[in-house]
Image 1 (cartoon, rainbow, N blue to C red):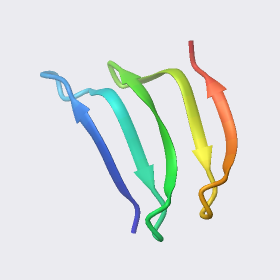
Image 2 (cartoon, rainbow, N blue to C red):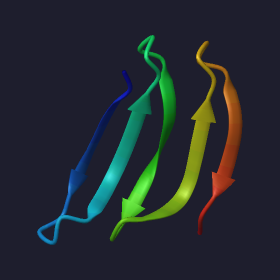
Image 3 (cartoon, rainbow, N blue to C red):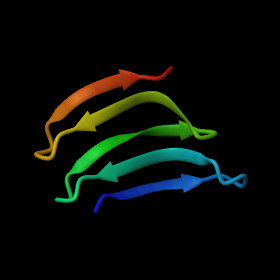
Image 4 (cartoon, rainbow, N blue to C red):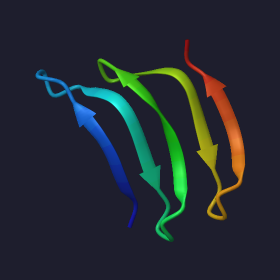
Length: 58
């Protein structure tokens, strides 16, 4: 089961730093949301914790 950490604003939109985790507890991805849209650099990791992709969402 994956888990996630992050917050919501008053309008229940994703906001701030979010992190999701693989079933084994390793970080799956991390990045920032603003009004439920990805912003800035997002990083995606494999189940061993190795960076697989980094993408800029502006």
